[in-house]
Length: 167
Image 1 (cartoon, rainbow, N blue to C red):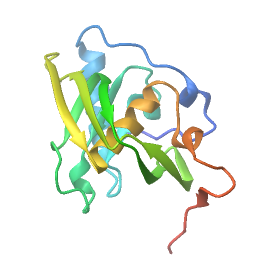
Image 2: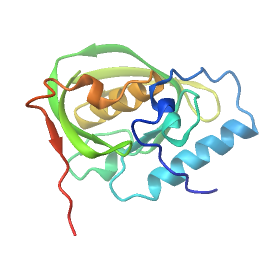
Image 3: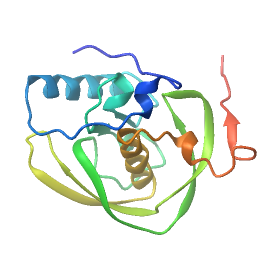
């Protein structure tokens, strides 16, 4: 399947709320494959949400193991209709996003979450995540609700940073 272009802010699709997936059909299977292929095509991307490739459906793909600092995680996953049903703690994290390529910023996130979702076979699943994996899940699920990390910046004056460009 093709690697898709990632939409960048201020594309209005990124601010829309995605629709729940009600069945697995050929179109949904294609979106899932395109999400995984697009995420895998970049060495730095640990997650992607369907709106980032222009599809307003509630699907995310994550691969927290691509972050060398993330030791405890549940591996590469596709989550359909993900929902955080429990959270605890608060941690400040420095986030970036393929859809906001020129900036990073400090965001407050839950330290630990429980996420419920449907897998690629449309079977209900749930797991508890903490640390980087929990932050990643919150970041990607936000995309499904039209929220970007820049909307959650602690202080736009002191916690938004221009990304360094390496040649």
